[in-house]
Each structure stands twice: as structure tokens, then as C-alpha cells.
Picture 1 (cartoon, rainbow, N blue to C red):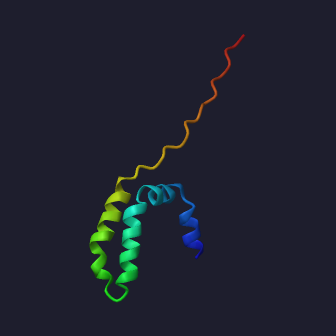
Picture 2 (tube, one colour; picture 1 turned 90 degrees about the vertical axis):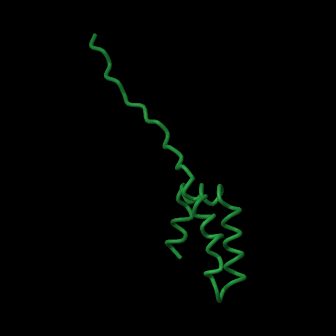
Picture 3 (spheres, rainbow, N blue to C red; picture 1 turned 120 degrees about the horizontal axis):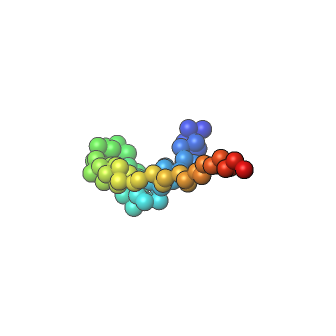
Length: 72
């Protein structure tokens, strides 16, 4: 459970959950309907993974480096 909580708070995981909500929900629904034959959900899983691979991690904010003050 702690791993699930940690990963669900990771920025990239949040981006994937937002960008790929529809294919993930379809995959999840398929798994619920096919508990005894999860292999039937390969197409839904593939669509979700293809979507997730397209998500680009948000770049961190640029840092500003301090410049030395000129000698007076």
C-alpha cells in the first residue's frame, strides 16, 4: 500500500493518470469483467501503455544561477 501511495503522488504518474484516464478506465473495466481471463484485456492494456509512453514529464522550473557582482 505504501508503494501505491508513493507512486500515486509522483508527478509523472499524476500526468499519466490525467492524460490517459479514458484508456486506463477501459482497461480497468475490462479487468473487472474478465477476472478469470485477464488475457482478454490485452488490447485495452496496449492502448493504455501506448498513451502512457506518449506522456512527456513536465520539465522542472528553470533555476537562476547567481552571477558574481562586479568588483568596484
